[in-house]
Image (cartoon, rainbow, N blue to C red; front, side, top):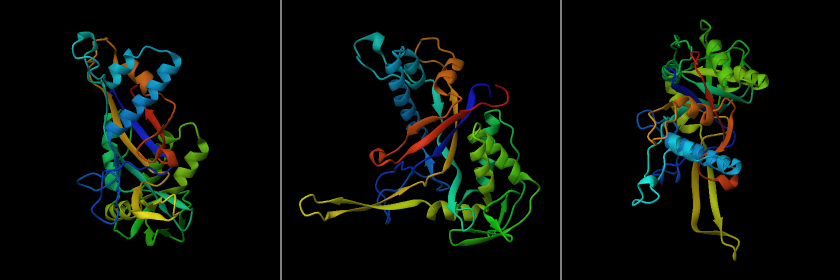
Length: 304
């Protein structure tokens, strides 16, 4: 579709987009999908961060804020003043859903793990945005995996991730095709990282991916120190979850009609707020301790 693009979120540091207080041993869990329980970043969070990023840029460069209000919406400044009425934003972002989960590997340090269901859902989004992709035709058992021809995570027909071991099975080239496609979309101008990604891309079964998405996230213990006694405050020990560095998520971005009355067309919005170059953003909590640094990039389909 001409008015739809993919957007990608690549975590540079651990990413915590919380869902409030947890009911298990993790006090501050991350956001997850209701049905699959896979991690996600809400589209509203990404849109809010994008708005803040471009507001700072527009103020610095002394640009007209009307375009930002058309794209991201405008709050009601004065209900008695008709000219200051609020409007919805025309830029729409879906939730960013998990694509590749980084998992510790005995060989190659870590792997970018995906599964057939993740890739089939991604294919549906890629097709909506005008990208060309192939289906995942291979189905396999929970103790099996497929890797690329140049894989660094495979030794003697085995892949060892966390405390799980998998037998390598051959496919018809789908794994290499997906690795090439994702590497080109994520690291278009970085051949070194394209190679790193393709050497570590692995497709696991849906069940094993489910298990790793629950157990393979980062869980840190946090404490608050009593400044006088220099010990932990009473009850001030908690555990918080985060997506590990190198996690990759993706969603769709598209334009609805212009609600601002400014007559802004969608190409102007895409050109300004969905640039070809990656944006360095901070998403989620714990910004002051370096969490949530991401690369956010938008990609055009073949028809644009």
